[in-house]
Amino acid sequence: MDKAVLKNTRIFFIDNLRVFLTLLVVAHHWAIANGAPGDWYYTENHLHEIGSLLMSLFVATNQAFFMGFFFLIAGYFVPASYEKKGQVSFLKDRIKRLGVPLLLYVFTISPILVFVARAMKGEMKQTFIDFYFSGNGFMVGPLWFVVVLLLFSVGYWWFRQMFCPHILKFKYLKSNWSKAVGLVLLIVAIFFVRIKYPVGTWIPVLGLQPAHFLQYVVGFAIGVQLKKSNVLNSLSRKVAIKWMLLSQFLVWCMFPAIFILSGDINVDLFLGGFSWHSLVYVAWEQLVALSTIIGLLGVFKYYFNYQTSILKELAQNSYAIYVLHGIVLVAMSLLFQFYLGDSLMKFALLLIPLLLFCFLLAKFVRSYSFFNRIL
Image 1 (cartoon, helix red, strand yellow):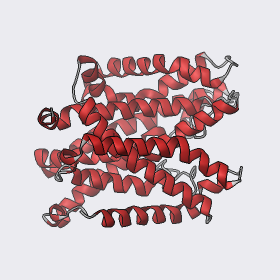
Image 2: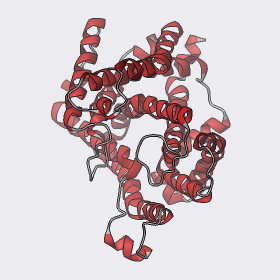
Image 3: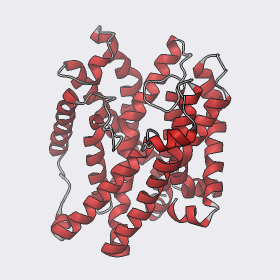
């Protein structure tokens, strides 16, 4: 079985992981739209105490690992793409696949979503034409990921020009002690970044949070090296399950324990600043990221290393789902804006239809050849 698993490593389980993470992004933003902590175009909050705790745990866990994991997977495919296409074609392809959708989103989708969301709140006093040309709707939104990935890709391209073949000689730190030191240094570095830029602080043009940026850099760098290393092949089922169990312990036991034992009800203390609360929360996030990523790599490697017709369709449309999902979420919020029941129930009941509509919209848009080439 292991030989069969390793034979199809890239095509199947990594593609399935990318699908899983994309759907998790949609669910994450749908949770925020229904009252979970975070920023989104339009939000409502009719959460009871238990619902608020569960939704907060959900988005906090996602934020701890899923975008870093996205950058790791993106980095995994970069070296092969560079080698296959060459210097010029690689850069052109990155600009086409990342830059063009970004521009279309900023200048078409974003103004519509911002206008509709503000109109739903009763805050819009302008016509759409006046609002559009004011420029206030030109935002990157969730496509901050595309902005950063484009920057990372250009950075990789530049590194290959300047330092090749030296970059190819870089090796992982092999000892467990060196890896542990690396993790501690990452935790300390993120802690100091959050003294000035707490969680929730955004860089205006790029639309990203400095509080999480270092994890993304490390994730992308590890992904670049992962293809050349033997880490995926040597990851055993037993080790992966242990890491996954650790991940669940950190989420379900340590997360509430941190807040209960601290005796503080001020959540802002954990989001940044020079305090032990922030340091502990940073450590929790990075440990969750490490254990969840290793655990999911193993789980998908051994249990989801296959591709059905549905999974193939989802894999082909995952990028389009990511780019377009905001349209479906805002539309769904518009349709159910007069629902005053529990938001947790609304989140749960509409999540599957929401994911289905995102897929159908992505598939419809990609049926046009122009969008099929860039999405």
